[in-house]
Image (cartoon, rainbow, N blue to C red):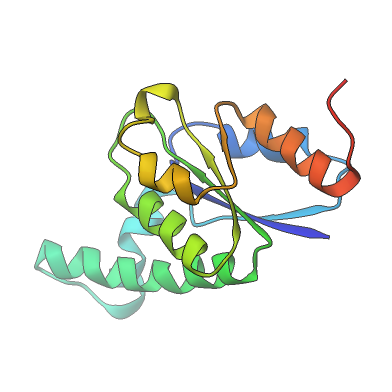
Length: 148
């Protein structure tokens, strides 16, 4: 079984496209919490209110980091999606963390991000433009078969 961690942008259905496309493959998927409010507020919901927004966000980031570190550490392949709308510093951090751990890294991004992400792309083993390309990479890794 191939364990795949899906990191990055949470505002589109790219994860669902990959998981649906990979049905029938021997793949298990993991991801961060993709409910934006839950992710932002987990720290104060669990550890108590914070009047200062910095500490509110910091508590959430630390708890989310536990899930992220576990997911990346246990993954065979890490896919990091850089979306078009927001700056995703956390996605870049996840890609760097995965690369530092020697994980097989696939970056999913549009061409207009090529220059900004050139160092991240240099650490990746593949740079895909569409979720379907990620599925075909996974299929090839598992079976050695090319798309028909």
